[in-house]
Length: 378
Ligand SMILES: Cc1ncc(COP(=O)(O)O)c(C=O)c1O
Image 1 (tube, helix red, strand yellow):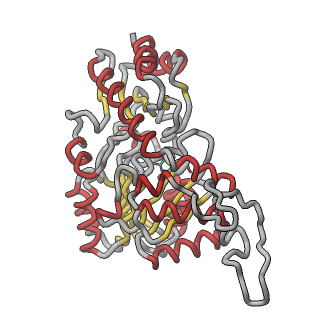
Image 2: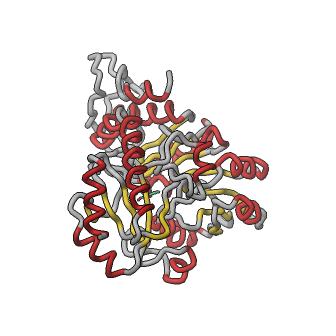
Image 3: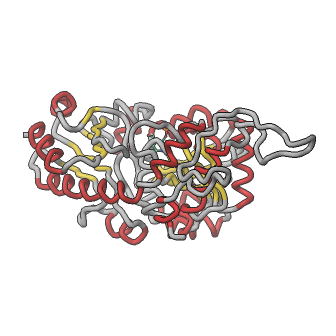
């Protein structure tokens, strides 16, 4: 079946006992053994839960991977993936990555003796040079980056990773496999903050790590069970329900984002606009070739921190909050929210200024979004 069909029927046909079209929420923690040495396939809910399994199998199927694992948050999924590496390994990482991922790597990866080499992954040559450093065993790419929306050439990086036989991991939170399919470009693992577009309604915290091969999938399943940060049954059900409308939601997020980006592009108070859907954006051509959507995220600068504060205090349709990918449009101030873990020098080097705002464009009527932005910018 095609991905849209798999998604529309997420969780259906999985309960032969009742024929339930919506997967039941199995709250049971323990499962009765038919006899000594026998199992229904479920023993204890951390190891396997029927509702979570329905979600994990659906994601693995539409993602085109061998196995997917659902975690209690995106960071829990990334933490499990980080634990695939060993003492002394180096990992090349997107430099303007989500601040929480950076904090996890720096605060908890370094003490495990992992080394992280941060590069601009939209520059394939820079990645190639970094991969030649001693001990590199992995490449971790966020696409597009958070918050500057830079675009990496997934296929070109896939070839580099394959040539060096290293683990190629893509954080596909912003686009999802409904638009961009990293496994088709050589990725070994995809990770998601399912809290964002997969959940889509700002009401479920979750994470996914999906593996292309059985072998990696089994290692991740072992880690998931051993470290225990699994997604609960109710959250799993919420995600199954959300997946059914993912392709539709993505289309509308993108449609609205393009209207907002074009408006901002013309606005005299807006500078350094980042939206890969605009033909003028440096990532446009590469993303057109590897994604069916440019997504719903926009970043831009205004002339002063005072204007940022005015915007955050005055928006009436957008809400000042720290997340993305839901039906509601949100405005985020990266340097004090999502990227507060970066030190001042790193923020300056990456161009993350206190004049930069990030918008997550929701599913509202675009006219209301434009009127809101117009009022606060003028
Ligand atoms: C790109 C990206 N990856 C990972 C995460 C972490 O996910 P979570 O907040 O679900 O732990 C986030 C959160 O904002 C994110 O934006």
